[in-house]
Image 1 (cartoon, rainbow, N blue to C red):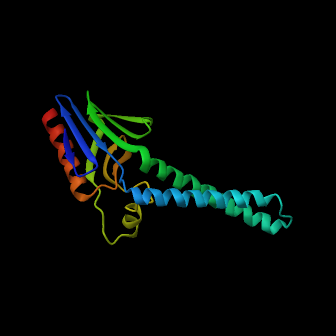
Image 2: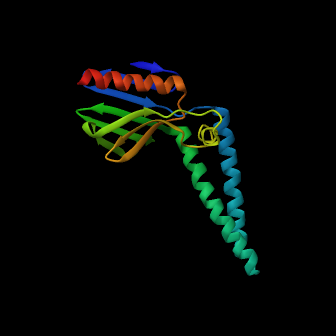
Image 3: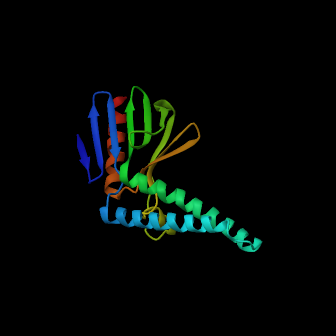
Length: 182
C-alpha cells in the first residue's frame, strides 16, 4: 500500500487499483463546528417555538423566511459535520469498471462507470486568487474536488480538497495503472 500525504492511500494489485481519500481532520475545528451546530440548532428551535405565540402576520412571515434559511444551513452544516467525522471517498478500478463512492459510516451510493466510456481524465487546477477556490477549500464546506473525468456526457468530480501534491500523485497512479492495463 502506498500513502500520499496524510489522507490518501493507494492499493495496487494485479487487476485492481483502489484509492481511499479521507477528509481533512482537525479536531479543534471539528469541535468548533459541533458547538456552532448546537448553537444554530438551539436558535432555530427557539424561533420555531415562539412562532406559535406571535400574533402579528408580518412577524410570522419574517419567521417563516428565517426558518427556511435556518433549515437550509442546518442541513448543510450537519452534512459537513458528519462528513468530517466519518466520511471518505473511495475510487477503485477493476474488471473494466471504475467505481466511485462517497462513504459515510460504511454506507453510500456506489457509482459505476464503464472504463471504455471514460474520457478526459484531468486535474482541476486551483487558482489561488479565485473566490470559489478559497470557499471550496474551506474546512466548513464539503466540496472542492480536484480530479474530474467525463463518462457518457456526465462530468464526475472527486478528490475533495486535495493538495496539489496529493492530486498529482493520484493522477499519476491512475494513468500508470490504466497504461499498464492496456
